[in-house]
Image 1 (cartoon, one colour):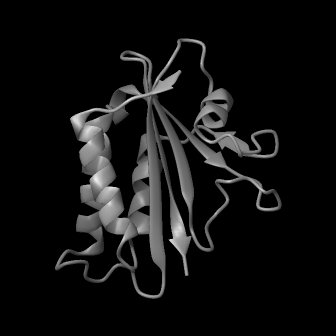
Image 2: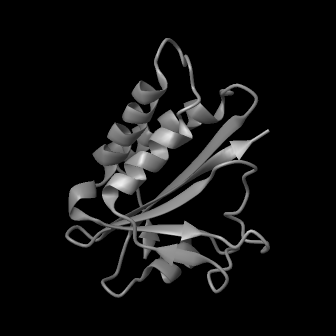
Image 3: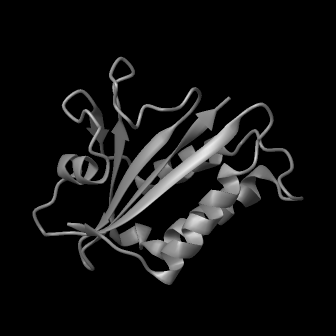
Length: 153
């Protein structure tokens, strides 16, 4: 397994940086993403441990939601945004999902959600309000996109 990049992923990172630099009401969003080339035997716990060595996968829950649940979670994440540079919350969420989709084919990928134990010192439990970590694996082109986000005050 190794990190790599594409022009689409670089654009996605720029979009995430833009969100990182803006406040939504009383909260500040933060995002991180990693793009990996994988071996065929890589599983979600080994992927997370490779990308985020300070995780505590033995205490976390890893479930396999449907793709529509990812879309619902992203829409919920941006739902309280009333006006973001003239765009509605649904437009911001749509732009986020479109940029994510440009990096990896969601329809032909397996999706996992990583949920750290709130009582752990897991580096991915770093948000005060809603947060998420998704592992999106497309075995056809041996790519994995990890997207992590949350809110700080």
